[in-house]
Amino acid sequence: MAKAQKKIILTGDRPTGRLHVGHYVGSLKQRVALQNSGEFDEVYIMIADAQALTDNADNPEKIRQNIIEVALDYLAVGLDPARVNLFIQSQIPELCEMTCFYMNLVTVSRLQRNPTVKSEIQMRNFASSIPAGFLTYPVSQAADITAFKATTVPTGEDQEPMLEQTREIVRAFNSIYGDVLVEPAIYLSANKVCLRLPGIDGRAKMSKSLGNCIYLSEPSDDLKKKVMSMFTDKNHLRVEDPGEVEGNPVFIYLDAFARDEHFAEFLPEYTNLDEMKAHYTRGGLGDVKVKKFLNNVLQAELAPIRERRRAYSRDIPEVYRILQEGSMRAREKAAQTMAEMKRAMKINYFDDTALIAEQAKRFAG
Ligand code: ATP
Ligand code: MG
Image (cartoon, rainbow, N blue to C red; front, side):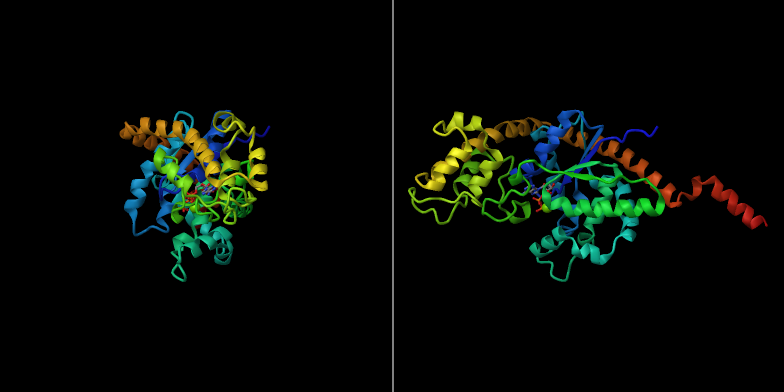
């Protein structure tokens, strides 16, 4: 009987800055829930330093500094090192080896068509000087996912094109060399607004590279300042004017974060968000009041995260030990997959006694 397929999670983040609330609702929250569900056999969470270097090659110090920031954010949101392997991408050389072989299964034009990479190239003003490593990072991401035989990848929706490219590589590899690799599925938040949380400036995506973030580790005062400075409906000038909730960043954040309990605690004149939205839409509800409520909600959500971060940051050597141990375990798994791949590709020359005997016979004759 065939063995039941293991359920394995792989996902990660680029250490280009501290993690923000977009990461939280888009991916971190799901990871913690999946970790706690007990349904997964293995969980790997990667700090993607090698990927971050593809567009930060001249600034390795930035990456080095942010590794510990991301690790603290992971621990702060409740990822548990006893159940999850937290590791650093560059410490797993097998990932580079796999990337190198996968490059042969992908065309340059396919890479140029990847919509996420396309928009990231535009955002970074690379024009015609795109680093080859940046253009090909979806291939390295395919290595990250397949090295662990991940079945489930919890991410924001900007990662769907990467997952699609990974599945294509898996199918190409398996059809040429035999069934070794596993096709991964994306795991998205069920809450639509969490798939791509906008920035506080109203731009389409909160992103470290755009400087429009609320960080998970945001001090309470700064959090309040950022919320109070957020974009809302630009046509909602007077309190009595009718307002637009659709596409209004403050309401999008409330969609992502507010629960009925928050109303009971902070704004009992409404029982839920729908009531508040209805009031805003018909007019008579001011932006300041809405923002104050959002501030209370975010303060309540982020306080325990900030507290846990503070606790872990008192023992930084321990955090590095956690990453080192996670990296060791991740490397074992990646090495296993690499060995299977080499056998399938018939490039395991020295272990292949049949090959050696066959060649010996050929030359003896
Ligand atoms: P960078 O600007 O350096 O690319 P980033 O803020 O886009 O940084 P990543 O490290 O690229 O962050 O993304 C990590 C994970 O968080 C991915 O799974 C991505 O889909 C998710 N994510 C990032 N930004 C958002 C967002 N605004 N809303 C929802 N999910 C997000
Ligand atoms: Mg990104």
